[in-house]
Amino acid sequence: MQKFVFVLLMFFLIFTAPLQARSLLVFAPHPDDEAISLGAFIADKIRAGYSATGVIITDGEAFAKAVRANRLSKKIVLAPIDFLKLGRIRRKEGAAALSHLGIKEKNQIFMGYPGNAVNRIYKSQKPDALIRSRATRQRFGLACWRGDKRQVAFTRKNLTADLDEILKATNPDIIIMPVHFDSNSDHSATNALLMERLQALGMTPTIKGYLVHQGSRRVYPKPFGYRPDKSINDPVGFPPPERYKPTPAGNTAKEKALRCHKTQLRLKDGFLLSFIRKEEIYWSIPPR
Image 1 (cartoon, helix red, strand yellow):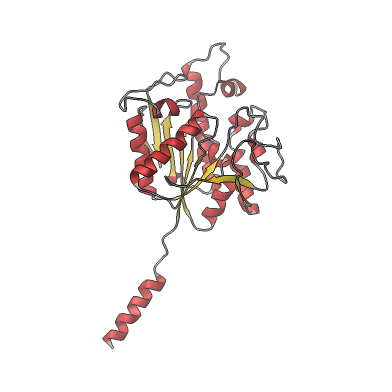
Image 2 (cartoon, rainbow, N blue to C red; image 1 turned 90 degrees about the horizontal axis):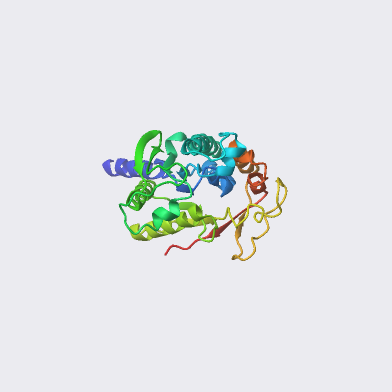
């Protein structure tokens, strides 16, 4: 009788224990990259049961054209406060976009590093050297990790430690990150940093790389403009990408997320909406 009860108990524990949710980790150098990248894929995976964490590395504040398009300053020469205003707005837009994709506030991380400076931090020869933002003139920023504020020093040592903390805490099955051939230096440096840290930590998740910038914003993606019924042409000069066909719900979530970025839509160049397509493209990145 005791043996029967033991076997019955083991059966219950094995077959009724909740399955461990698979983990998805999304890295966006700037607010809007989280949705541009593989927004529909992310939304579909979350609905399929994946736990997801969204990490936005900078606030995308160092964008003079966006400061002017959003009428945040009337000055001929922009001041640090003007860029800080843009950054605060863009962080809120990023939080709203992540929420539309299904990533809850408790799983949202805004690292607070300076825009257009990730590459300079990455290539710094002195790990403790403070890197000054050319836009805000700051050497320290304010990060927000899952709703908790923390000050961040703009050094390679700190950025490396922050990335390691995120990777260890999430232990992702899938990472979504920029490809190394993205022409934006924040994007290519994000790829280099993450590949370096994954190797150092001995982690080998599935990596899906995305492309946002190929020189001018009018070069890629093609065809240009809001064409939700079209596919994206393979970008010229790169290996052929893989394709993901989203569910209708995934595409809807992606479009809602992209439309949160009003500061970028006010540029009226059609760039963001050009990523709303019937397919998303990506490149599988092998671990080192």
